[in-house]
Length: 124
Length: 398
Image (cartoon, rainbow over all chains, first blue to last red; front, side, top):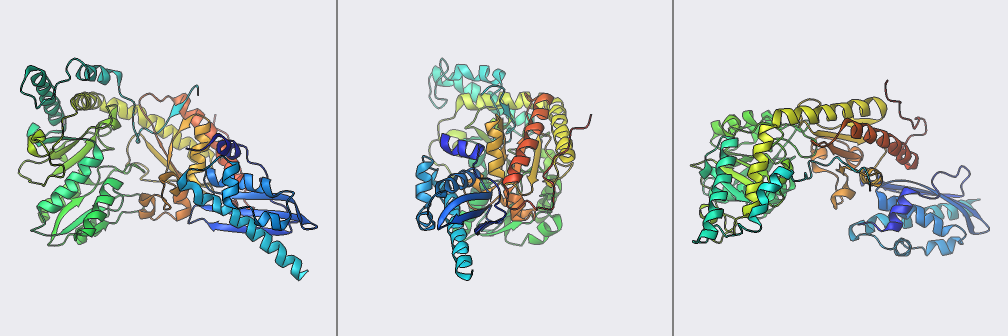
């Protein structure tokens, strides 16, 4: 049911962990729903220089977390806001229909991290 | 993959080669339709009759009380729907336990839409039906109580005899879904006091696509599959001859070898449970600690989601199942674990391991070793794992 790329990203996820001195952090989901994603970003001159995540969730949630954080590194925050779950799914070669909702988590967590970064920057 | 380890025997089992041998002639040379009048048909009638006699004798029933179906789901649908409709003039209240298989739960919900009133009988923390609550739930218009013999997810064995006695005293038909119990526990409809009972061939090393509904003689339920005169006009459809032959042989072998198989798989299971409890922290054994099916172990691993654990084990060649929402294809975690009062987080983190007669102690040990690595890896990924805790597992005792 999962593509080879999904299983690979799930088995060897990239960017796992936390950034101590992060510039933005977003956390989406709930334990009750069975998936939670936490994203940390480091931003310099409007460019995301580092991104890390922690995810409680299924193989699809972990694979999309890894791929999405990999995609936004090097992007400007505005470019990163345009990274949709559909783009992440395309990079992974597709997800089973019942798993699409799991990929929305990564998109939302990244958006939340960027919101957090923007509000911190505005208040700085 | 080499050295695969199959620990999902509650989902299905491989067909025993002895069973397959009995079935094979009925695909090729003895292919006749038992409804046909000629010799080709007649030779298969004998096979179906023999299978029915065998099954009846093994569960303490009469051959006329045995109906062959396409499996456990059809038998469950039939028992519930057939009883509900046949007894509707006496009352339209039905009781099924909250931990029944979806074959029962979904059918009960359909019947609600048709105007039946349904009570989902509550269970205790181990998944056993609360007898006091069940007794209070029975109303004058209750016609049917359905409680499984043992639960498919957590393995808890239900107090079937007590439930049967209660139903008898209140004049309510009692059905038990014995799909998980057949082959694993001694099964006798008289001892159990069941008015109706279902099981399926593929859970005890028989073929898929064939099951049984026992209906006590004198109890008249409605049909759900209309068609020809098969199964004494109660269930249309050409008999799955090879299937019923295989089911009967598999049940015969399972009953003959029941005590020894149960001792063997429970020894594997007990070692597995003992090692997991000692070596992996922050876990919960789901289901009753003793009063459970011999093959079943079910754990919730805190801070870890069950489907990710399932696929991590799968990548290591180990096959298990999970009660997480993501495994079930719905957004809800296991209804069984929620009915037992488990918090949703723990329900999402549940994994079922069901052992079989071909598993070995070495496989049990390898599974625990892989499980330990996997749980540590997934907890390191989990935003829920508390920073003040150490993400560790403990060595196996010498």
